[in-house]
Image 1 (tube, one colour):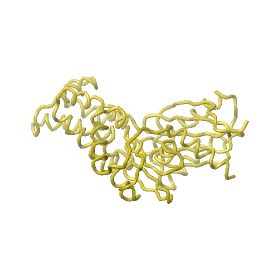
Image 2: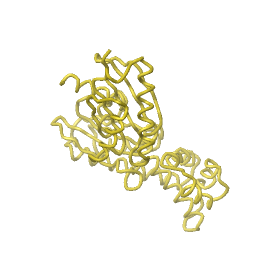
Image 3: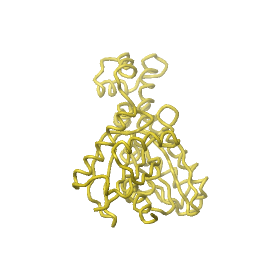
Image 4: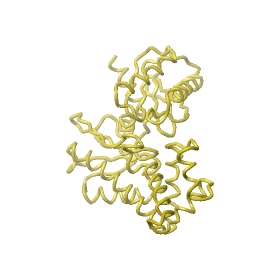
Length: 308
């Protein structure tokens, strides 16, 4: 049986889906993260290879019957990055057509299909990507947790840690974040954060996890938590606004799909974002994706099959 593989490789998890050439889902498998900008090659290879192996075992198939494999993963933008992922896939023994692209591309395809629209992703990281009917595309953000990812879970988490230390210094007033974050991380005092951040091995995913504590502190009335969430909302709006303007969507009934745990689960951030979009772009519609990025990768693979 011939089939296609679609993979969504994110900073928190990697989701693989396999479909037959008629577009019917055969199986799926979820593994660990595979972000090329925050992980080494061996870990990425282990995740991708395991996902492919587990997925194929679920349908009792082998790679020789795969027509096209499409993978969208965070941090894939430069030719050198794509080459690394291509080499990983080739190491599995697969020698068929491979499509490697940024996960925002597959996410937008899953969200709106091949038509125009915008996808705003805010989870562990963040990115905004859009496409108009002329085929023009534009992207903002997604530059990694050190120089980008504004409004993401990592952005919120690192700002919370910064606020705790400023409070500890006496440069700013007290905040519930100190007690709540320390309890969440099972640490004794603010100085323990030095060990946690710099020497414990805590990475992007762990710091991004602090975002949910910030939301809890905000709901408990903490002013500093509210300021952090408001800044995150403004950052996400700024990313989306630029894409809207660059692609000529200012007075168009464009669909903006939101995805990722921060923008979809944090009611304050989502509410602020929707409010700002509606005020500036009354014709725009904010909604959730029709399908996920892994299925978007499947659709890209199927389209490629039709043109082979």
